[in-house]
Length: 443
Image 1 (tube, rainbow, N blue to C red):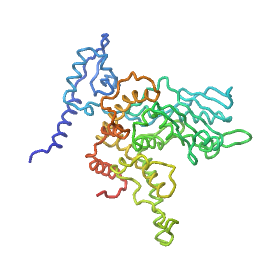
Image 2 (image 1 turned 135 degrees about the vertical axis):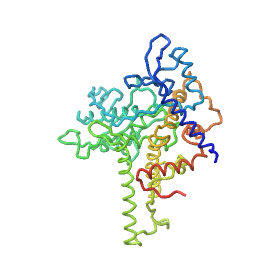
Image 3 (image 1 turned 90 degrees about the horizontal axis):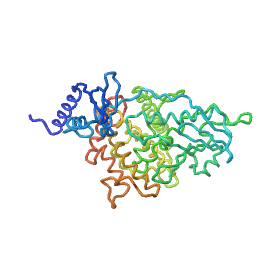
Image 4 (image 1 turned 30 degrees about the vertical axis):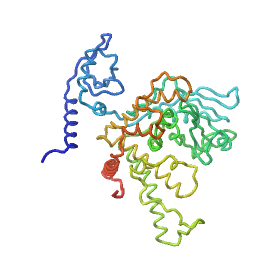
């Protein structure tokens, strides 16, 4: 029996990977004559990634290599797709953020102002130093976690992020905070600039002996989700909701203890399982109540029955990625709408985890290419946000007739095409079932 096209592609890919692994170390030189020895692992972000004899990786910018080395890399990459050229990613098991030393205090404008390496915090009331130190450590740690992932974000050099901490919910909502929310990142342009708003109560700050300090409910990690949005703000207009919220949930739900985020395989899977178990327990409790008293589900004022919790909280990827923007609106009332939103946020986290750790044999090849292209083109879109002449060239694919949805679809083409959705559902399902997750059969 002859091998089909898909099987032949797999054989070719395996042969290419075997060739990559078998290549010996060689001497590399840049255009100024400096040399080092190393074995090529791949090409990523305009650099040849090599493994030095010390077992450390080095990124050698292709445009600074000698002409001979540039020619060698070109020959090495011949016949490979950009995904096949990528090196195996490095995944940290933990990300530790040393305690931040804040500067600042009472502001001449009123209130209090504090500074950390990448953040400026504005408080409308005095807060204890321990609270601000913890909050700043989590904020800087969230940045460190994001930039430790093998996906590309805009450089941090010269960036300052702004956070406003509000004593009352009234002042929080007056500043633009959404009623009932724990915090929000507000941005109003393609440039990605904006401010993170946080009410005291979200952090668990209370007044004791005339001072605003930690209560028993204090939790500085409550806003890592919104901090992720803030750190990736330049990309938000170009990302579909499931990508933006999936990444924010992925980071926001990571275990954090005393300045350290834990994201090793066991920690990640445990986090996902605990999150899904919480929702599944809610469904089981509802089913038990209905079995005990079927009449407990009474008609609503509109005549329809009370919305029930789903048997499965994890949506098919093909369903999730096709949800329109309006479906994600959190200001829509009603139990059914809130159930749908919770399902989408949970499912987006599972799908982002899939692309980061399960797809492409765990090498995250597609999602790395996705963020690489997204970050490259975001420079041009950011300049539009500043309403000034663009020195960056427009993306080659862009036409005047393209809608924002078309633009987003262009980038997600790195992850899947519409023809791939059935296969995406099947692989997503199989991968999580193999890890012991209980998902229904998707027919």
